[in-house]
Image 1 (cartoon, rainbow, N blue to C red):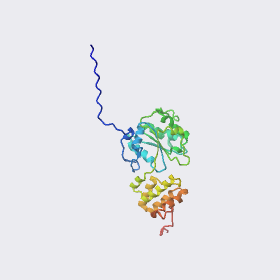
Image 2 (image 1 turned 180 degrees about the horizontal axis):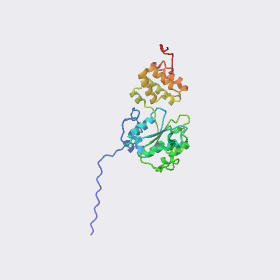
Image 3 (image 1 turned 135 degrees about the horizontal axis):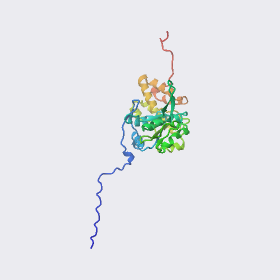
Image 4 (image 1 turned 30 degrees about the vertical axis):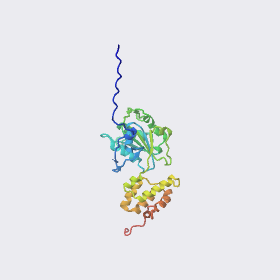
Length: 310
């Protein structure tokens, strides 16, 4: 009589606790980074993650990112802090092109430049070509101002094509696209003339908005009176009772430095002159609500300095 087979013992369950957090939320933070201009970038939260760590993780998975927000809110600063100081040995960590209505395909890929001495022509690579050559991210700043037909130069690579072809220089072999390349787009969608086609928008895996962190601005020495004025303007904008210009982080830091060196009155008047003319009266009224800003007036030259004549 055949002996009945014994049931096999089940493997012991692991006693290691499982993390209940989504994988994305377990991305290791990068920490504060120094930008090329020497300023320290303080990381911010993005969907529960550190923004710097998120961008690097998106790069590792070739997931293109589109950042929107008003000028001076920190879009370029985030890209620089994420990658410029993350360069591999002997290589830059980020290539950048700033878009305009006149940007061409050659501005992305490169062009032939004539040597004024020898008269010979030499190929000068553009930022897209350099980014693929060095296997680093490409930041397309003010991407919404570039003609949609020009931006098709990015489509094939953003769709996963493994090679970059340079049609205006047939002598160049196709360049292999490496794992460190991806596109970061940055724009202010409210600027006149801004437009992004649906075809391009769909190629960006992640879209998010950047606004100024006024608590961080306070920690960086921006006067609370200015922060209060700006927050009030933002509230009014949300209530659709104000549509004018609102200072952002870059403007606030410049204000703070000007106040430190030249005095509060000078900083206030300089900020008013910086404001677009159409919004200057409204901003001036808002600033004058603070006693230290009561004499706000757009900065302008005054009378001749006494004793300076000959």
